[in-house]
Image (cartoon, rainbow, N blue to C red):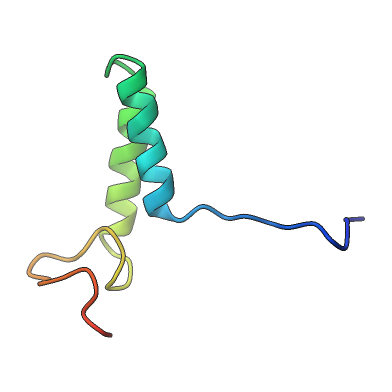
Length: 66
Protein backbone atom coordinates (compact mmCIF):
# COMPACT_ATOMS: atom_id res chain seq x y z
CA UNK A 1 0.00 0.00 0.00
CA UNK A 2 2.73 2.46 0.91
CA UNK A 3 6.45 2.68 1.17
CA UNK A 4 7.53 1.97 4.74
CA UNK A 5 10.35 4.48 4.42
CA UNK A 6 8.20 7.19 2.85
CA UNK A 7 7.98 10.60 4.45
CA UNK A 8 4.84 12.70 4.58
CA UNK A 9 5.39 16.43 4.69
CA UNK A 10 2.55 18.68 5.72
CA UNK A 11 2.86 22.42 5.17
CA UNK A 12 1.91 24.73 8.01
CA UNK A 13 -0.61 27.50 7.32
CA UNK A 14 2.28 29.96 7.53
CA UNK A 15 4.27 28.08 4.87
CA UNK A 16 1.25 27.88 2.59
CA UNK A 17 0.47 31.56 3.11
CA UNK A 18 4.03 32.60 2.21
CA UNK A 19 4.05 30.42 -0.91
CA UNK A 20 0.68 31.80 -2.04
CA UNK A 21 2.00 35.35 -1.55
CA UNK A 22 5.11 34.47 -3.59
CA UNK A 23 2.97 33.09 -6.41
CA UNK A 24 0.73 36.15 -6.23
CA UNK A 25 3.75 38.47 -6.45
CA UNK A 26 5.47 36.40 -9.19
CA UNK A 27 2.27 36.59 -11.24
CA UNK A 28 2.19 40.37 -11.22
CA UNK A 29 -0.27 40.55 -8.31
CA UNK A 30 -3.25 39.89 -10.54
CA UNK A 31 -4.27 36.33 -9.56
CA UNK A 32 -7.65 36.39 -7.85
CA UNK A 33 -7.21 32.71 -6.96
CA UNK A 34 -3.96 33.24 -5.03
CA UNK A 35 -5.30 36.33 -3.27
CA UNK A 36 -8.56 34.63 -2.27
CA UNK A 37 -6.57 31.64 -1.02
CA UNK A 38 -4.43 33.98 1.12
CA UNK A 39 -7.56 35.59 2.57
CA UNK A 40 -9.05 32.14 3.24
CA UNK A 41 -5.94 31.03 5.12
CA UNK A 42 -6.02 34.17 7.25
CA UNK A 43 -9.74 33.77 7.94
CA UNK A 44 -9.35 30.11 8.91
CA UNK A 45 -6.38 30.94 11.12
CA UNK A 46 -8.26 33.71 12.92
CA UNK A 47 -9.96 31.08 15.07
CA UNK A 48 -6.85 28.92 15.50
CA UNK A 49 -5.01 28.35 18.74
CA UNK A 50 -2.76 31.14 20.05
CA UNK A 51 0.69 31.03 18.54
CA UNK A 52 -0.61 30.66 14.99
CA UNK A 53 -0.84 33.36 12.35
CA UNK A 54 -4.39 34.58 12.72
CA UNK A 55 -4.28 35.86 16.26
CA UNK A 56 -7.52 37.03 17.86
CA UNK A 57 -7.86 40.77 18.33
CA UNK A 58 -6.00 41.99 21.38
CA UNK A 59 -3.37 39.24 21.36
CA UNK A 60 -0.06 40.77 22.42
CA UNK A 61 2.36 38.34 20.77
CA UNK A 62 2.53 35.31 18.54
CA UNK A 63 3.93 33.18 21.33
CA UNK A 64 2.21 33.89 24.61
CA UNK A 65 3.55 30.75 26.26
CA UNK A 66 0.15 29.07 26.29
